[in-house]
Image 1 (cartoon, rainbow, N blue to C red):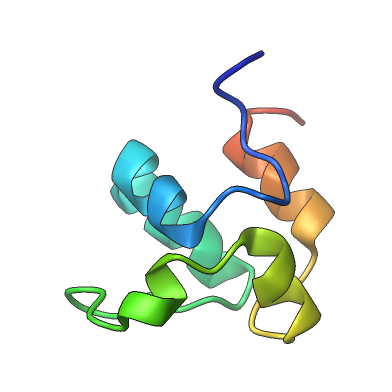
Image 2 (cartoon, one colour; image 1 turned 90 degrees about the horizontal axis):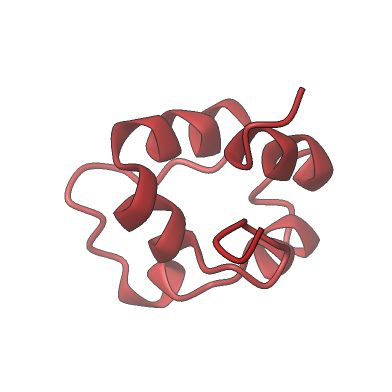
Length: 70
């Protein structure tokens, strides 16, 4: 699936493509984008980088959720 999310996907892509569903999924996995998402550097952080810096938990689980897998 060409439009699927991967560890190299940016946080911004998740929020732009999935809106509230993406924000909620990120939050469930420990990443709070906050209101207005004003932290420009965080917007362009990859999911993998966020997981390595411990801002995001269970990257594999998040990717399954974002890609609609069970």
